[in-house]
Length: 432
Image 1 (tube, rainbow, N blue to C red):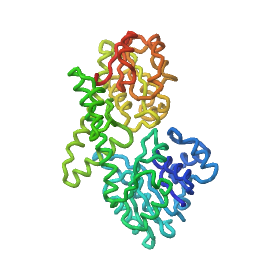
Image 2 (cartoon, helix red, strand yellow):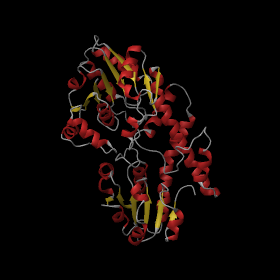
Image 3 (spheres, rainbow, N blue to C red):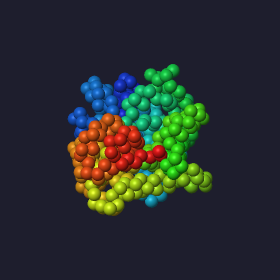
Image 4 (cartoon, rainbow, N blue to C red):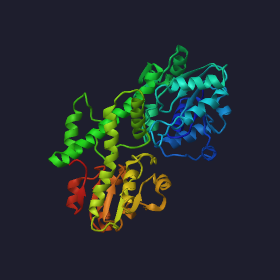
């Protein structure tokens, strides 16, 4: 099939690479000329484990191409995916739909023959109706269907998840469109669950799923706080909870709060949709406010370690919102760094992949180290904010020799508390 993908971000690019690997002819479209020039010259514009090899293979075979021309990507396509950003509005926190609407208006002009237009971006319920209306308005003769195809790619594992989906949800209101999607995902037939639902149900599923997981994360973080006060161990509690098949073990890891490009945006958007529809989504609202407050509380734990010397050096390990990605959008690490900077903290940070993106957010307000040991040199407190395996495997004897004062605030519980205390560190984790 010929597939056009509008947007080359953390959804569009891995999806394009994956579809090309499955044998489709894929053209990725983006308005950012610099980004397209980089991709056409063989440079990836984001870090994602396993992406580079497939990117090089499929660009070399010309199964995967990049362009700034909507006409080139859409004309003659069997299927066009919209995978542009839906960032939260700075005031209302609703999903900003301007890029979706602009893409729909422009792609409409180049539709030839029957085409399935897919909203791959996470969009509010009813967006498919709006996209359909915009296409008809701009090209009344177009022969098309609009389908909702929510993405469930985890950053850091996007390529793995593309080829090993736990489900494929398709919101299609016509048999013709359903048949096109069945053909697209034929390689997964018999390997995963393919769920066909109404378009509006599909649009709701992604928000409902992410909101539920965000609530689960916030819940275990509250349990971690309780365990610290009561003398319980949150990991033992989580293990006991997770053995209940109704609960399950996933998303029961305590930490500094949820973050990233999906959970904060989608919980806020879901809450806004609830308010717009006159429905009280109190659990989601509570998770949002509690998660926001948690970042300040975690920063407070760090500041408590340097109370007597506010300008003491703070070493930060980790800036990305999770390991396996360079994405700093809504990163709990960056939000905690931001809270520390409100107190004029002296921070030196290291992240294996995300320092370039972090610098776009905070510039020279913090210093950047060439490795984790340089970051720890002369520090009075070491703060672990992202769960990179490098940090778990660090030579802590070397770290001990580098630090000025042996304080560790491990907000990812990467290190063994008993081992750290035996080495002379004053160690503080979460929930135990």
